[in-house]
Image 1 (spheres, rainbow, N blue to C red):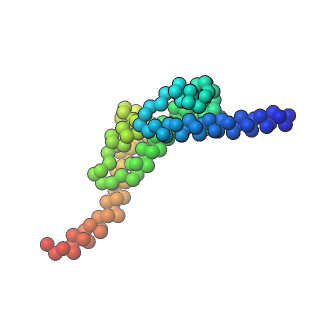
Image 2: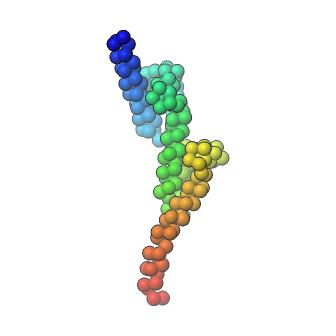
Image 3: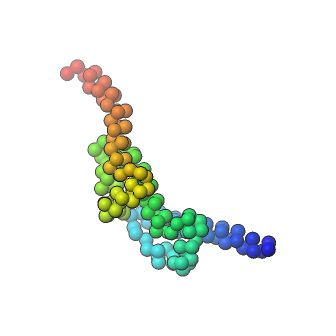
Length: 143
């Protein structure tokens, strides 16, 4: 019984290491669509083994995990956007989402709002915090 339990613990640890190696590989190749077949060769598992490792560790397939990660990165960029300098299209394509309708639908499903709503709120917050200072500076010049 002890050897079975030890085998499961080692299996869990090796699955975690495999998933972390796969995630590191994908992060090292940003903007590149890494096929599961290549990723499985990189980590030394079959595609099925890689999927099973991801389901065991992350509770989802590798593809879903990487899409979720890219969506989180896109959301971060939209939340950090500046007035006039950030666009939804620019952020989406930066993270490999070229079908903008599908990106918007996936984003809304993940976060409960559209990417344009996130950016609009960011611009509103930026404007609200910076407009008084800009107005104050303009008034100091006595045109």
